[in-house]
Length: 255
Image (spheres, rainbow, N blue to C red):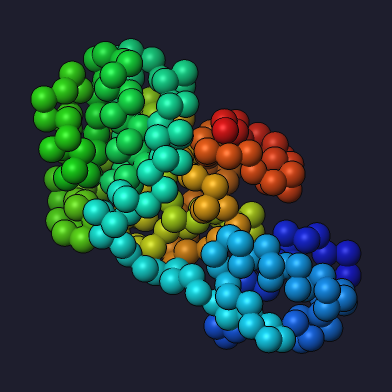
């Protein structure tokens, strides 16, 4: 493992952590042919990102990759970051656009902003919260229908998939739980992951909304690769590694 890039090394360290739940400085330093101080710096960065807790001689995993938080909990997390992302949406949309939107709280916040600025928007969504929130708005709303997941207030399953397949959209407005350069775009559960994937396939442009806390992490279910994304909107300037990575993928980045 000579000449491995720093972000690739950290991705491989994460793989160790998801497998073993803990990792040791000395073992990783030997495996990657780097100094123990280098591994300690990796752990320090990962701790700041909330992935690990450093311990004497190593680190332990503290990220629950398949944790599916209730909507009310998700809605209360990083609310300022979500509002920041929402404020950047309007330049990417036009009056009359059709939007496919998932159930994420970040997407909901952005739809609130869109409602204030645009007219004649058609919204196709599997979000129960969005149906309630925009019932008296100027949006033309199409519900996907489907099986209700009460924890996330989402509609999923074959009926939802069939509805999404029936329409073509200008924009797929999606979020996720995590972004990893090597593992792609990931989320916490299969049913919603499947529907997001289908929404992306049916849209001319795919916009991913992800605040800074979601970078350099891996969740349970892979939704898609970066080559399926046209634009990422976040709330802070990502690292130099991420800037170079997204440029190499021809992904527009707004922060």
